[in-house]
Image (tube, rainbow, N blue to C red):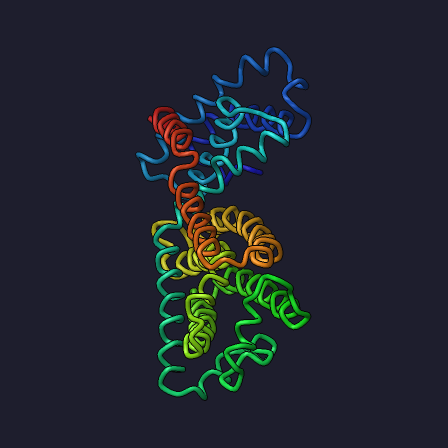
Length: 340
């Protein structure tokens, strides 16, 4: 990184900034052990000097490039001076203990919107099919229906919900359902940059398929069984889709409403939060696949299916709502103190 074009504040402190940047580069690339004793002693002093310069730059409303340069430099120094350097295993543990749930919590508005549009799709699909069964073929792809339509008998539909022995057709359907939902989650995130509109439409469409199928099974007297069959893995899979949709919406909103930042900076910040959330979505889809391929095919009791599905949803709610809050609060308090 290079400092912006000459400015009086930069002229006065350029040497200190360059030395701080050189020390940080060595530490980041080769480790702290490569630093000399003089560099280690100078690092906190140089960091406070840069932090003071950043405060002056902000208060006097200096040019944005200088402020951005100092913000990045101070952030790098803060992470080295006050951050905890740990092994890859500890970093992974920290991600799941703090970073991922914190990222999802920061998306709570977008997650609420994504969930509402998913539920809206379920309601719309159900109402359309209830009004006219012809809508079923329009909403549910042939690969997903695979004989599950209004011409099927209650016995044949009940067989698809049976855990006693998975038929070849049910195996194909399960594979398609998992693949479809995985692709849906990734696409919801990837298309978020288009102002979030494709993301919302995909959420509605995905929900409409579920609503249409629910009406089909309910019309054959299998509504409760179908919902139990879906819930055992669907609470995880649909939540993953909602989180992916929320991540996509965050990027779309950053494009539309960058705020005080320029649009590129706003999108970059949104992308960092969204990408952390999406890394966890991959794990959620993997766990949903396990629940779908193992638990759903070995547990046939409807009550147990409901219990497991709702229990898993409760665990996700507790995890995303409270995991890492204490550490997050300490870190925020530390940043505020040093910023002052």
